[in-house]
Image (tube, rainbow over all chains, first blue to last red; front, side, top):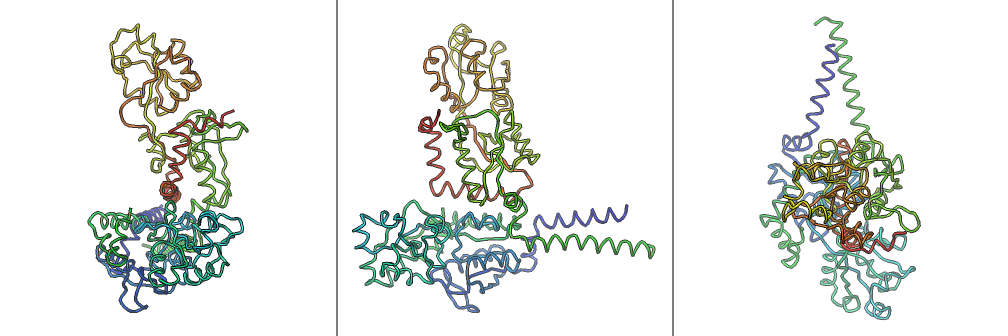
Length: 266
Length: 284
């Protein structure tokens, strides 16, 4: 009987700890382990591994850590979003951020917070080809039209769902645009922030490339936590809500993306 | 403590540690949370529904296929989970749908199911995906001869008022709360209620604007004898019911509804099935 009682007591202790263990462990250790992509990705993540982190996501994590009263420890080894999610599954990190779209497919294995940024999809097409086709929508709707998407793009999951095997995954945005210019792809699907920055940096190529906004297609960028981290998930959601209400989120967006991008957290 | 007892306890502690360690390593190895893993392993998402059809939420179209806003939503949820959808239409009442989810005879319920506080004591509900206003069908002759003056409350909240509600529905609870003096009569189906209101066996039938509109469309000449009143007050809200243990599935379904709200799918479905009669073209 004593053994049974001991087992029951241990089970109860374990169950009690499970309910808030995720956030308690972070607060007790005073360290929040954050999974990030290995590579810089302006304006979201700037700064080489080991150096102070900047960019929208770096600033946001710093804000969350400050409000939780802990230090953020960055794990910057992931080469893809799937590697980031694997780090969560293996409990190597407490949360992950890095232009992660809150896709329903990935949400089967992790919990996404509310989006900290809602961005629209943009289709980069050759102006002349688009005009000849009668508009970019007709151009990309063709059954044989290939669609280039950068491998690290947040719109990749939604593009995969929409275009299936017509997708051409390219290593960079520049490579995706080259596929459009060489007519190997009808269009390149990217998020509006990346498209705007590319056009700023490449004004000459921009003369040939049309940036067509897809107003009804929006992607939410969110923070991911393990599926079992219910308390941490609820806390970060509340923290993000407060950051929106007190204007912190708009300040971070204005600082890193520019004032015209504010108001994109709802 | 004797040496024997200490050894025994030591072994028990090791056994307990092994159990918890096993759970921990299993968790690390499993890609999906247990609730999602169960559904993906079964290869299907089982949706609890009533045997009775409730257009435009779920009904048979011209090809005798199940369709409706709930069918479209459930099918899309299953597709996004990477499994097939299976509709389990076994419940005789709406309350029985909830029981099916509790007893795991179905994974979830998307079935014109009101997220009442009473039901929420035994299952978890997602955010609201549709809301409808309450409505009452009133027999004009009985209302006139009652001489209980204008206004819905004096007419219906009276000992001589017989009001029909569908058994095991949220209307059963609402009617009892709103009209405590009236005689509330539970029926097996909404069709029987409308029949008895039209033939003066009931003073009124309580449901919502969807049911009232469906009856009006099917019986345009009935408007002479029966008046439809859409009531002021809080709307009836519909949610997806989930077994209370399926916590990640609940999160996923809420995320699914938020995503479908964001991409406009829910707006399109509400416009098609709730806000206009477009769906009636699909009726046999």
